[in-house]
Image (tube, rainbow, N blue to C red; front, side, top):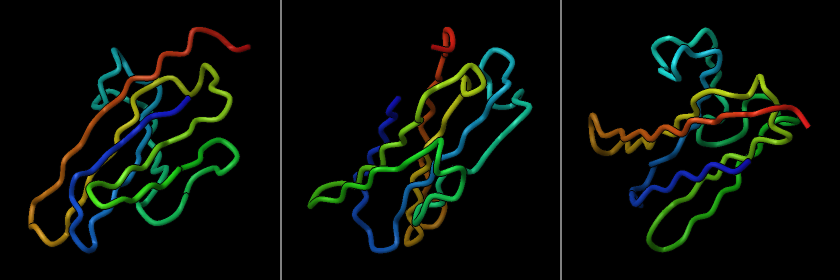
Length: 105
């Protein structure tokens, strides 16, 4: 499973983070029983056997693809990427993706 997060901000010091929320009622992050910080913007920080992050930088944007390896029922939930632009106070944009796993194979 690959989830893509793209930032148009090419500001020095800007970065993208990934977070996961599982065991959610109606896939609303405010009702989730579990949350994990998967990627802190600089290196993988949670379960490298389960997750990977592919980094792509070019002249116009930054991409951080979250790879979820061998998705299982317990991986179902909401995954959020956050774009952080430290040079602009209060500048942070987020995007959520819902992962539905129909069964283990």
